[in-house]
Length: 282
Image 1: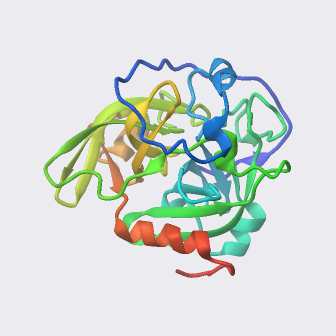
Image 2: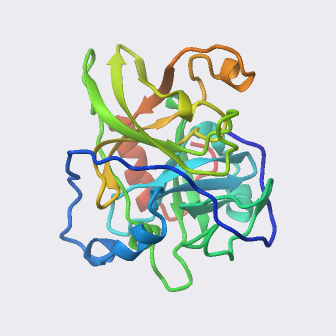
């Protein structure tokens, strides 16, 4: 989690990452409407180093990474870390914004009207559910002024529950906005790694994603580099081995912790999708 970012009007684009081909395929269902039937090649040309469905959630608890789920008929659910949000739904409605594919252009500022900084606009919160034991939260969003859901605009990753059996590993792609000395928290960083599960411990090595701002970022298996989508299996959390040492510039461990989606999360997402009245404490 990072410090809050105040809204201002500024502009310019700064991003520098390279995607390498990942020989896997996404399993998203292309039978429904919205983004699945759109040609997004122009989006990839404009933003070759970002995942459009990953962005910044900025609100009363600060700012973190978040990602869109390809789940449900409306496609209006994102996932982040629980410590990045508050149980005060009214505060989230009034103050929180999700900015997909965000890139900062000046310290501590946010210009949601700048197409380089917020190329897909900003989306407001309706409601949320918090899985505090696993440090995962799910947020329901309003659509944009054109009536499009967040999934219609940027796509999303299909959630897979209980993805990694105990003792096994998966090739993954993870993304976030780390602030760690190498990166300043204003650029989306996307990296490949291998996630493993040892009992209750779920980790993957990736020093670049250490630091405040990566919390809540997606951990994706079966990533398709052409669609920039895959199957999300969990979210990065703040309890990384050696994270404070990295922030202090000293030596640290290599493993970054993440929380894996399970059947409780599936029920929580379904409840959020079907809820009519916000529940302020889950």
